[in-house]
Image (cartoon, rainbow, N blue to C red; front, side, top):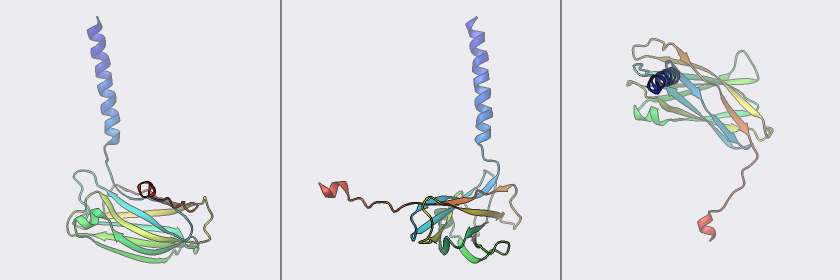
Length: 180
């Protein structure tokens, strides 16, 4: 009598795990922005990550991020590890947002002759305004795009927005081992 009950509960458990597990399998490509916490008048970094499902190849990934130019100033872009791995070219152009005069847009393009693997493709450096209010969360909106090696748009494609939280200065702590 117990054996049929165990078989039914085991079957239900396995079915549940398969259904939940299938939700975790990535089905679309994404170009996402990260987050940072920084004090006013310091550099803030925004990571751009590429997630590519099995069977999809990306040769170009772009993030057009819009940000408030009274709180952030674009400084530089650095190659991420995934871009370095395929010797990708990383370029940036910065301009005023034509739809909103209080915002600017930095367009980051990562191109490679080889497929770009999942991971961090770029690290965008901003200078946080000295007047940025403590506790404010600065939203960076993301407009992603990606191309396959044959130049066709990757679909479906998603992208998460980024944010920078303005914090107080972190106290400098000495090395525990040095102090003893």
